[in-house]
Structures are given as C-alpha cells and as structure tokens.
Image 1: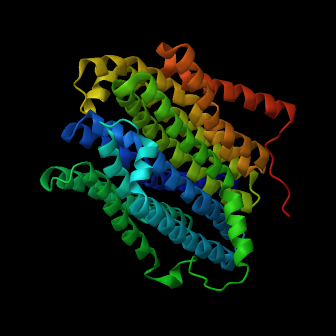
Image 2 (image 1 turned 90 degrees about the horizontal axis):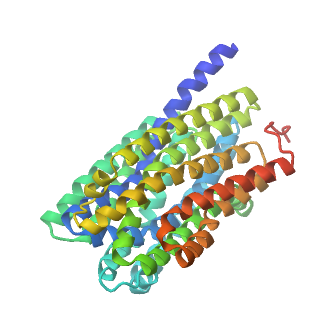
Length: 446
C-alpha cells in the first residue's frame, strides 16, 4: 500500500471510530446532562443538585468499566493488529465475565443492602437527601447495565462495527430522553424515574450491540470459555486499564470531595451552581472521551503494526479535533452563561447571578484538563507507562487540596480552584518530561 493510500485509510478510520466513540460517550456523559435538564424543569433545582451529588456513583461505575474494558480493549486491539485472533478472544471473554461479576456485586451491596448509607455518604443536606437517595439507588442497581453497555461498545467497535455502536448509543439516549418524561411526568415517579430511564436505555443499547454476533463466522471476537491462562489474562487486563482507572477513581474522589467542600462552603445555592459546572464538564468529557478511545483503539492497532507514521497521524488528528471542540464550547458558554443556567430550570435570581462567573471560569479551566487527559493516552501508546500513571494520579488529586485551601482562605475565588490546579499539573508534567528526557518513539517489538 502506498503512503498516500495508507494516510487516506487512517483518515477515514479515524473519523469512523471517532464518531462511534463520541456517541458511546453520550451514554456515559450526556445521560446525566439530559437528566439534569429534565429534572430541573419538571422537579426543581434541588433535583439537579441531587443528580450532581450522585455523580461519584456513576464515575465509580465508569472506573470499573475502564479498569476492565478499556484495558481489555487495548489488548484486543494489539492482538488483532498482530493477527492473534485466539488471544483477542481470550481477552474479550475475560473482560465480559469481569464486567458482569463486578456489576452484580455493586448492585447487591450498594443498591439493595445499603442504599440509605450510600446516600448519606453523598449528601448531608436534609432538604436534598431524599432526592439523592432515590436517584442513587436505581443507579447502583443498574450498575451491570452501565458496565456492559460501555464494555460491549468498546469491543464491538474494535471488532470492526463502529456504526452498530453508533446506532446502539443513539437509540439508548433517545429512549432515555423519552422515558425521562414518561416516568417523571406521566407516571409520577419523580427523580427515581430519571435514573430508571437511563438504566432502561442502556438495556436496550446492550440488546442492539448483541446483534453484532448474529453471524459469528463474520466476527473475529467470540467467547472462549477455556480456563487456560485465566489468572494471567485477567492480570494483564487490569494492568493495562490501571492508568485510566486510576485517573477515573481520582476523579471519583474529586467529585465526592468537591461536593462536600462546596456544599459546606456555599450551601444550597452554591451546590446548584457547582452542578451546572459539572454538567459543563460532562460536555467536555463527551469530546475528550471520544478522542481518547479513538486514540486507544486505532492508535493501538498502529502500535501493533509498528507503524510510527500511522500513530503520529492518529494523534495529530485527535489533538486537532479536541482543540476545535474546546474552542467552540468555550465560546458558547462565555457568551450565554445565563441561558445555560435557565436550560436547567434555574429561575432564582441569586442562583442565576452566581452562575455567570462560575460557568465562564470553569469553561476555561477544563481546557488544560482535556489536553492533559489526551497526553496521558499518548504516553501510554508510546510505552511511557510511568508518566501515564503519574498523570492519572495528578489529574484529579491536585484539585482537592487547592479547592480546600481556596474554600478556607478565599471562598470568593472558589471557582478558580480547578484552573489553578490544572495549570500546576501542566507545569509539573512538563518539568518531569524534560527531566527524564522522554522521546515519543515506538519501542522495538518484543
């Protein structure tokens, strides 16, 4: 194949994978945003706050997905790139089993046995607590549906059917949106209906993804029920997904700690404003997650082929896309912050006033966050696992002490904490990169 043909092929593959994975990210990111908009307009601003207080649960479930399926997805891509189909099937099967098992444990322990304790861990405001409990319990019970939806989307995409992933996620979110209104307004389920609609949407999405295997002879990934190499295979899956999972668990801790700090410092009004900002983060995550999963899948295939030029092309296109996306998002937020607040049902003057500066500063704060997250994937692809792990820890944990210090010293500048923390992280990454004289070159095949 000529170099020009190879570049054209990567170009078309990049946008096929990107469009599919952005739609996949909708099921993890935009589901909460849609819930917030509908709940804010049909229930109250406190309902939006309750959803935000429950986000550590969704992020923790997403962490389990990353630990299992993101790592397995990269290993499957490596194996398929090297034409080791049997090895790819082994990784796929183990990942599927781990997803079902951990999802079931989460549903039983958190959703059925200790829902009240889980809710009180998230929220100590008695006015918001009942809403948070009802929303969070259904999320926990539906944990297996979340993990399977995200996991199967990853595997079906790697196996060459990104369009089916797109279809599944579109229908998933359409059903979520429709059932939100049906469950909340028509059936009068309240905020419980919002989380129930999300779970039902995921179940339908899973059913659609399973149609990928209607003709097994045309699919490379199949179940491999042999126990050969079970422990070592699971160990490699967890090890491969660890950097992304660490970043996600740190984000879970950040969401949990930030909610606590903001609620105790600014009260009911502040936690609603913070909920708006976290919904804005979900929009950024929509783009960064789609970009990073594309880099993982398509980039890993280039690594498996030892194609440095192809990998460079994939990374360059990813950076270009994330830059354009962030510029457009920032402009929209900075020009119409009150419109965004009203979109979530906000009509209290004090909440509207506080929302304007907070949304604008957060729109800028998430720019370095997105670049740092993409950089973590780049380090991973080039084999610099220690740098990827460092970023995983620093990405969220730096924010917690900065947020705590600002709350104690200058609460009027509390919303600047994220920007300050991410800039500190960027400087630290640059210094460490130069100190270790890291080069982005593919390592020789072992």
